[in-house]
Amino acid sequence: MIKAIPNNLFVLEMANNHMGDIAHGLEVIRQFGDVCRVFPEFSFAFKLQYRDLDTFIHPAMRGRDDVKYVKRFSETRLSRADFDALTAEMRANGFLTMSTPFDEPSVDVIEDQQLDMIKIASCSFTDWPLLERVAASQLPIIASTAGASLEDIDRVVSFLVHRNKDFAILHCVGEYPTADEKMHVGQIDFLKARYPGVRIGFSTHEDPANTDIVKLAMAKGAQIFEKHVGVPTDAYPLNAYSASPAQVRGWLEAARYALTVCGVGDSRLPENLAEKASLRSLRRGVYARRDIQAGETVRREDVYFAFPPEEGQITTNDWSKYASFTAQAPIARDVALSATNTQYVDVRSKVWDAAQRVKALLAESRIVVPGGVDLELSHHYGIERFDEVGLTMLTVVNRGYCKKLLVSLPNQAHPEQFHRQKEETFHVLFGQVDITLDGQTRTYSPGDVVNVEPGVRHAFVSSTGCIIEEISSTHYVNDSYYTDEAISANPARKTLLTYWMS
Image (cartoon, rainbow, N blue to C red):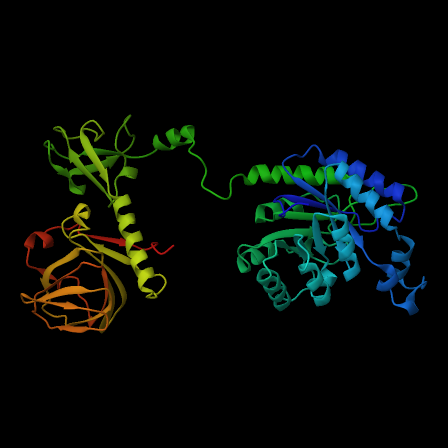
């Protein structure tokens, strides 16, 4: 028995197409074995249906040929020995084995046969006595959702999750055959979004000649596919929704094509050097606007951008708020900036590392941060000294009043400053912090409140790392005055991150 449901699993549903004829059933399996062997990128299972007819059919209804399904189930009855022969033939042809039980005694048979998986039919999706018996087994479960309400699906998913079952659910439309406009393949998207972590598949009953639907389902991210199959003969013609071996071959070829076209979906593509070179040739290069001396920091006003770029030149794609360039040699006007005449430092990794440490401190404090709040890093003397001197701020609201969260990493100091207009109240939420007001230093702990009036010089440092809730009057960008004027003279002392919480 398998221990888990494989991805890209194709389930061939025999149902009653063995027609109660064991020789015909064996031939069905062999012919589809020949088809499936040429698609090694997929996994395959053959599926039967089990009913304990002596107890499944009400005593008063037995022998009633005027009742459609009673007649069909009775006429296609097979013995346990017949079903054993069918499952043995499935294994001999490389198929995983599974069955749909419609009653509890049938689950006993599945376990006794050591089949690989159990299928829950749509009509049994909320058959709770059957679900309890199936959940008591150790087998993976695949369940179809045709006709189920959203509440039904929520309940069944919760039932299986809480029992730690390996399971998948299938989008399914219970009309046989299903018209194209009723396929609603978009339900795969809906189920994936509503039940993250649950594998979603597709049980299909469209015209067997249609090979477009499986491509759409594959592109939507379905991982399991189910179809009724059969082998037509003069005695046993196929119904309108069961596929012949030739039609299944076309179905699988369409799925193979979709799998190839969809390509990598669980990670970013590997680097394509030809693609990279082609795109680089279309970028703008960075050129000196004036003569630049060795040792100078190159700023935006010192350069211009123009096409085409030279070989090895720095391009606009390298120029960002995280990048700094220092001339290593004299650069004449209109000369390209490159690795040979400049030193390029990208501080993005430092910024991201700082953001992750702030995130970890917030998690440790168990302080809930509103979603979508920007993270503002203040690196007063540059990002290289952020661990020594700096602060992280999250502005929750800034109107007639302002609320911020101030995050100070361990041993990080906030330099002395004052405000002419803003009045602040600091409420210590986490950690200990030494706050200095007009030269007087005190240590504060969680729960302590400190008022800072306009004009009061204030600075702080935390050996443990701390989080302070700041409540104040409106914050104005030009209302922060640092004792060290070199900080105010640094125009690149702040970095704003929007997507930092993911």
